[in-house]
Length: 242
Image (cartoon, rainbow, N blue to C red; front, side):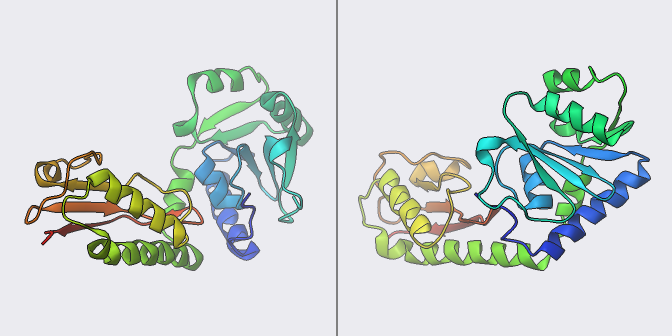
C-alpha cells in the first residue's frame, strides 16, 4: 500500500495548498475528491476511498481494511476509517465541520453518487471539474524522476527485443516475454498489454498479439510501457526481422 512515502511531505503539502487556493476562489468551504489518481496525487494514498480537503485540514475516507499499519502521514489531514456506509461517514464529518458549500469534482461523480450527495439538504454542492487534473499537468521533480525510471525500464526491454526474437516465433510468445522482462526490471503491473503486431497486423493501431508467426522482412510493431510508482512510459518501435 503506497501511502505518502513516494513523495516528500513538503511536495504533497504544496500540491494540496495549490488546490486549496482554487477552492477559496470558488468560495467553497471544502473540496470533495473522488477520482483515485487525484487522491493519490494529493495524499500519496493508493487505496480506495475519497478525500475531503478543507482550508487547513483534510479527511481521507477509506474502508478500514485499507488502513496502513502507520496511518499518520501528514499534519493537515487524517484517515476516517469506514466500516459500512461511506456517505453516512461523510455526512457526519460535514456536520462536525459545519460545512455549507462544498466543491465537487463532478467529472468523476456517477448519477447515483450525485443523488446521494444531494440528499444532504444543508449543503450546497459546487461543480469544480478538472481542478486537480490541471495541477497534475505540470510535473514536479519527483514525478519526472518516476517517469524517467519507467522510460529506462521500457527502453531496456526494447533494446533486448532483437535478441529475444526468433523467426517464426508467435506474436503472443514475444509479448509474454516482453511482459516478463518489464516486470523483472522493476515495473509495477503494466499500464497496458504490450502490442506485438507483424505483417498485416502491423497496420492495426491496437492489434492484440495472436498466434501469427513472425516472418523475415515484414514489419514488426512493438508498443510497450512500464509503470513506476504510478507513473507510466509508452514507447513504440518498428523492427524488420532478418
